[in-house]
Image (cartoon, rainbow, N blue to C red; front, side):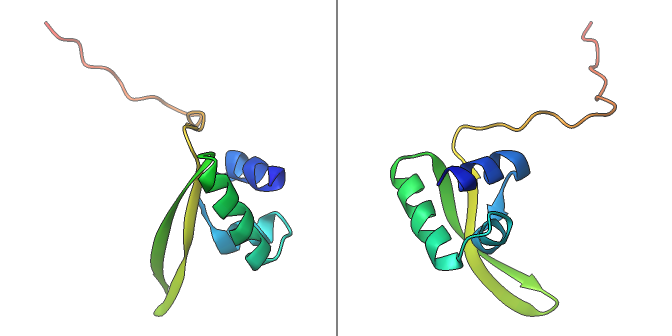
Length: 83
């Protein structure tokens, strides 16, 4: 389960199939671990349906609960002065 948490912290929100591939686990084992992590409120899961090249792809969309990834590098938006 630690592999899944590390993967999600590094890569952000992902589908269960992407997590299984990235963490080098089977999809069934990944779904089992995700269910256990969701029961402990360590990850947030929601059902997702995507259409890629006209094909329907169903899966679980996962992210770490309460984790905000660091801001991306680059220019920041200017703050308007209030007078």
